[in-house]
Image 1 (tube, rainbow, N blue to C red):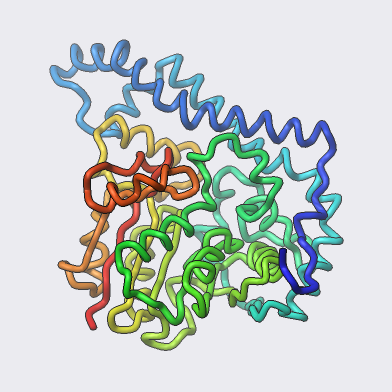
Image 2 (cartoon, rainbow, N blue to C red; image 1 turned 180 degrees about the vertical axis):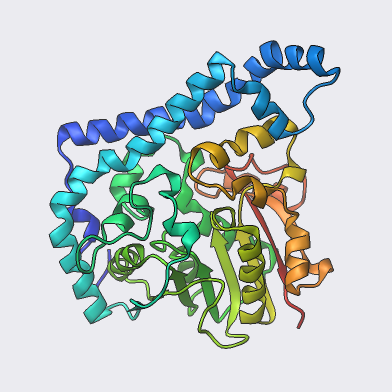
Length: 398
């Protein structure tokens, strides 16, 4: 329990019985679609769609795009897409009534936290920042208002609706440990300590931190670490700052575009991100990685958790992953995954021999007695998004 006076902003969220039941139902439907129906599409593909395609073209589909075109008319795929689309859209809507009731009180808590900075963190907002069009042109993830929208002064609503990785209520609606999105930071921090035992970062930056759900793990793992998180969306930063202050963890949040930050050269020893690059156009991806290279001190590490690239997956898995390109308001998803992560970091300035790509276990669900076997290459981590996380990065030359 935190020792400061900042209250838990999430304690103000009190869903009714029916609201909580609806949240659980939506979570169950979404989980079923993501972890069962998505992969059951392979059965429909192998039994029904692939044979027809082979008769028409004299070969099997060779890419995810070809499979997607062939699958469009399949009833099971249409059923899966309908279930997943609607469950994705219903998620924030199921939480919205409780958030709206609590919003005035939550705003006051966030304001108080920003004034007191009782845990030693800070919140720096930039009302003149132009939110990039790739964020404003779409309701990303089918969430009305996306991450950036503000409807009242000092709004935190979108941060609460879409960035509640630290929330105990969110934990109760999560139905499987294997999809703990807030476990990415813990998993990377643990892997860093195991893979680079002498690595002791002084300062770190989390790009596109949203509400800091993953950032908060790093100062807990590395005592004395000065942690910074940036994002273009103010609601999540306000909410995340209040959560971190309640947790008694000093985090410095600032509203910035990851492609163009105001930090000095070589300011950080560690730059991380999660679930970020597939949301931006590929040219912006290059800018972000070049900015990360500039910000890292000699010997500093870049570790980005992202979707596994096309080269790491068979054609069907590329089809399954790239569903979001067409249906989840993530238009850059497929283009990002067609990139080679190692080539991206090399183009940004990192030495090729320092680059890495691998899937690491999610420490919130993995049998940690088996972690040494993973480190030694004796076993593989679970698949990305199902108990593991794909990460890539590099180390800047000393």
